[in-house]
Image (cartoon, rainbow, N blue to C red; front, side):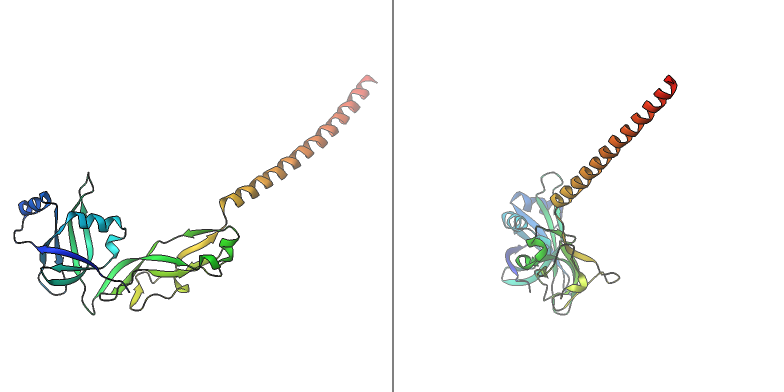
Length: 230
């Protein structure tokens, strides 16, 4: 299950657009924590901390423990607003995570068993159809990733949703079809070589037919010419 990344924050006493602009001038990002049958909490988080977390990747799919003046709130980001020109974080909405609550999240896919795949050993290429899977998860036990093993897969084999075991407390949001997560595809170099061989064989066949045709036409022409001479 996921581990909570710690974030230190401060409560916001002043609200409104003017107060938010003032916070940004001080390199603080205005944020709101809501949900869990509690009143929303307005806070600020240092800009450099948010930028560092965003640069790690998967910001919206991680869970965080926000320490607000000694009170810790377990949350997950639900909305991240960026500046339209500079991409600087402008505002973040966090959702409280409480026991028994269900939340829908895109959970990253982690591939395992690549060294044990016969298809990859023979030069096959791992083709990722889905880099994450949308799951309904328990609010207090959101997984960091869904592990998908390709051990034993050969060229042309695929892993579908029904082939994997989802983390406890998680269920897919898509239930009307068994979708593909990844597959082992033949490398393009192998395909290109095969296509070139087929083209070469075709050209050789056409040239051979052309020689025979020209000879046949030449013999007929000579026959016609000798007939006319007679």
